[in-house]
Each structure stands twice: as structure tokens, then as C-alpha cells.
Image 1 (cartoon, rainbow, N blue to C red):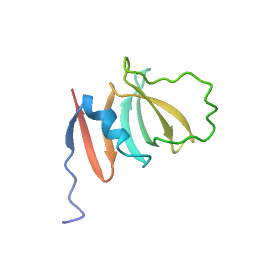
Image 2: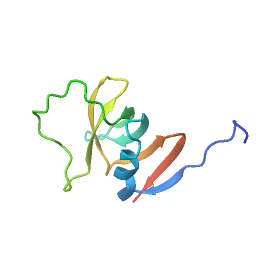
Image 3: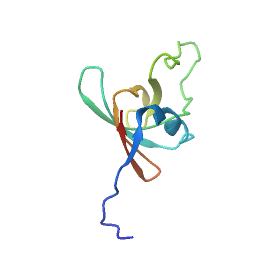
Length: 100
């Protein structure tokens, strides 16, 4: 395969995002999403980081919302991603375009 060719994005439905991200099992992935203030954020992140967690806070994720807590690898801190506003996801060398 020619390395100069662009990868075609894989279309993925929004309802499959959580299982797709959890399937990374702690590997780093990139995402692009719309923040609450309307700005766009690109982030390299991962799941499963337990550094600095005391276990005393309220968990943000539940069945009634689409929020997921991830660890931002650049900022070295935890961030909340709203899966309802996520537009692009790149992991394991694959680019996913989110559709409703």
C-alpha cells in the first residue's frame, strides 16, 4: 500500500462510540469534539489512568448521559468528553467519522 494515500474514514454510528472507545483498553486515541462553550477541542487521551484518583468524587458517567471521563495525555489531567458532540475518532491507525 502506498504510504502517501489518505485513509478513508470509517463511518460509525454515535451509539457505538462508547463500546468502541472502551475497546481501546487503555491505549491512546485521538478525538475531536464540540465543547460546552461551543469551541472545538482535539485531544489525545486514554482510559484507565488511575493516577491521582482518590475515589471520593462523584462518577460522571451513567446510563442517562453520554459523558465519558478520559485522561488528556497533553494536559496531564482528566477531561470529560460528551459523546453526543464527538465528530472524529482516531485509534489503532483507523479514522472514524461519527454519524447520527
